[in-house]
Image (tube, rainbow, N blue to C red):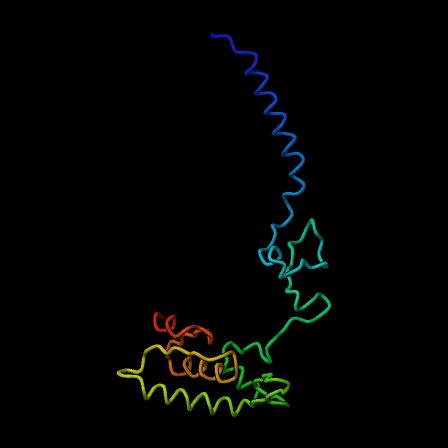
Length: 175
C-alpha cells in the first residue's frame, strides 16, 4: 500500500472541521424563511405577529400596515369588473369610479359606467370585420374613459392593447 501524504491528511482534516463549523453556525438559521422579493424592493414588510422560529413570514404591502385591514371587494364572488360594478350598484352609495381632475373629484355611477361600456362594446363589435374577434389599441391617459374602453373590449371579447398615452406616433405605428 502506498504511503499517504501527511499534508493531504491535514488538509482533509481542516476541511472537515471547517465544514462542521460552517454547518453548526448556519443550521439554526436554516429554518428562517427566505427574503420575499417585495421586501427586497422595499415594497413590503414582514408581519410582526408570528413566531419567527415556527411560522413562515407574512409579507404585507406598506400601503396597508399591520393595524389596517386589507383591501377587499364588496363580495367574495367579485372576480371581474363587471361583477364588481353589479355588486356596487346594490351598495348604498353606488359610485363606481372616482377620478381626480385638477382640484375636482369626478364621480361616475355604476349604471353610467355599464351603459357606456355596453355602448362602446357594441360599437366596437359592429366595426370589427368578420366574426368580431380582433384587437384594439387603447391610447388614452389613465382615466375613467380608459377604464370604460378597456372593459368594453373585455365585454366584446376583443383583445385590448393598452398603449402609453405619451408614446410617440412613430412608436405607436411600430406596435
